[in-house]
Image (cartoon, rainbow over all chains, first blue to last red; front, top):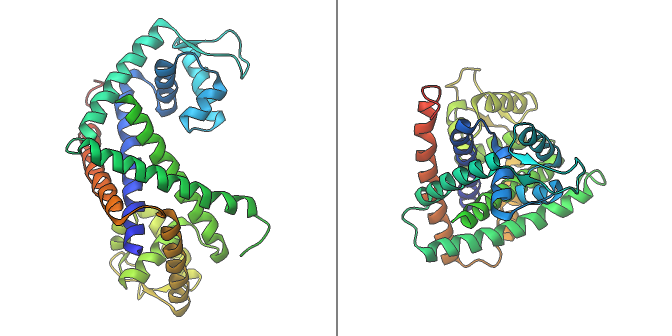
Length: 152
Length: 152
């Protein structure tokens, strides 16, 4: 049981770190950082989105997404009619090109990362991770709301 | 393909965050933080270890482990004959009790987190994650060594 905990948390920590590192290294040629890449990626995949919709997708906090959008706008990757939270962002020509280049890199990385796994094994893994992620979110949530009420 | 990348990275990010949150909340009753818990956990599981051995196990950086051990020693959880890096740390009576309590919590959390998965599904998931983690570490490593040499 404890062996399982150890294996799982260490695996997740290692994978997280590798993803962060690869993202940073791969994207340095574009002079973009993690949250910039996430924003460009989702705008490429899904078309115009508001800052709020990007926050939901990116799993980044609002402040990080705001700063990223500011940067992407100033550097000519995205445009928006005005600065309001509900105003949708659109990729410029430069943004579209970069988005396509990023998507190509991601394809090659996903291919390399999942080499040797059958589609069935991948599916079982995704289902299991989705199941565990759901359980963990529920386990984390009530604790959060009890915070400060009790020290037990 | 890109759907897969998104699903995988978002799942890993969510699980990471939940684990961090649960660890912090569960351990606040002991007035311990993440790296403290990891150190106590491994000392309980494996017996006396040096700071170096704990670093390898904990997937935390040396400075964080050093600070944790300092804290655990000052608060009477561990003792060591001297402060050298190679000197093994031993749990005190208080450290052993806390370690057992933590192990019990971990057992219950692992049980709850993996509810609904068969042993076979879990095994496929572990094998797939181990495989992906290995690929990602190799993908991250050469980039790291090239860092600064080229902007391509």
